Image 1 (cartoon, rainbow, N blue to C red):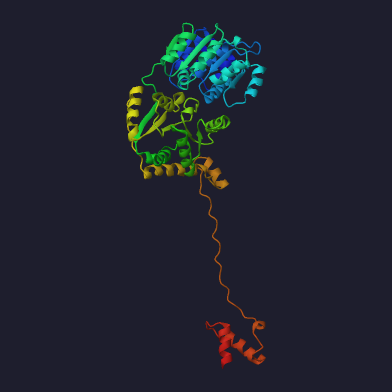
Image 2 (image 1 turned 60 degrees about the vertical axis):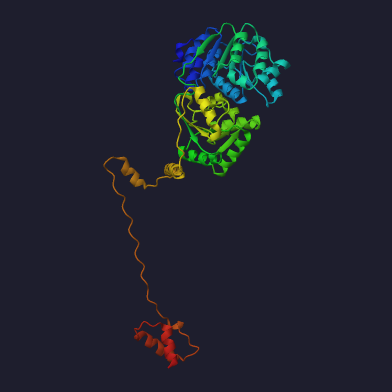
Length: 466
């Protein structure tokens, strides 16, 4: 329980509203050390609850004095910056701590105005943070806490020099916390240079991926990828799914294919504007569509609880990217499934990934059309049955409520059959222009006496012929 730590009731109340009851392993090992003002290097797998691990103790220790920021959080992507800021805002809801996000492709003049109003925690990407420091739009001298989130990703994206330049401008009397899924030499060198005797916390794991994720790969030809993408989606009917591609062009092609097949899908890659990317991520989280096609730019910036399927449409070239892609599902202790499409050209890369994560990924079976779409029809049928209303007579409903008193509703009486009426002949209907009145009277008299089935006009015609 979080109340075992010396943190305020306001934070505990906020955590309860967020559904946080028991600390995760990384939170349990980190919160108390940060409260004790120790520098930390935390090596933990993705999806382990790292944001709350540093967010809870930092928010607890911040004192609101003046406009200058007290904490700075660096993230490799805009998406991750927005995600971290949102979670920190939820944690600090009752303490009224002001969090603000800065990143590229966002109006810098708007950022400057908001920073001038005063903020407590700044979350941003290295490039934009460095831009603000050069413009002197905020005062870094009051910053007591610096967090490097996903440090290895910042290294991969070429931000390591910018990170070093930012750290050089931070006060020497501060605490620094470095969180990373992997620990390459360059990341450790930052720790040695800019941190004070940091304690290292390594969250043990049998594999570098989330253990509860069911992983498999399927062998196919390149031209078969779209066919089996359709079949796997029909077979598993995911609430949330990310389809990862290696290139933007591939993302656009897959998205077009999915939309042609009536799937609710959208795309995310570096060529899309930041405003649209933010809206896309929010729409995906809110369930407005259930399939997101993305490049690795989204691999560490999206945290969706209901993501139950990840499909590697292309096998990632970078081995660590496989870990981060697969880590999108199975978050917060929930299960998930990851499927990789492997062509003959990808086999060696697959073997290298298996060696990297220390686990053999089992080969799966390609689903047939009938198997995939049989499942799809069954799910559709159940969905329709749930949606269709049940119409019942009010009297029937009442009798069903009390056990043992139910009775069948009375049947409505059948409507009486209509009987054919015999035709009657009126005297005024007989034509008088061709025969005399006496002849007409004779015709009528003969008609009444005659019981044959011939019609009146047939008999009239016969009489005239005589």
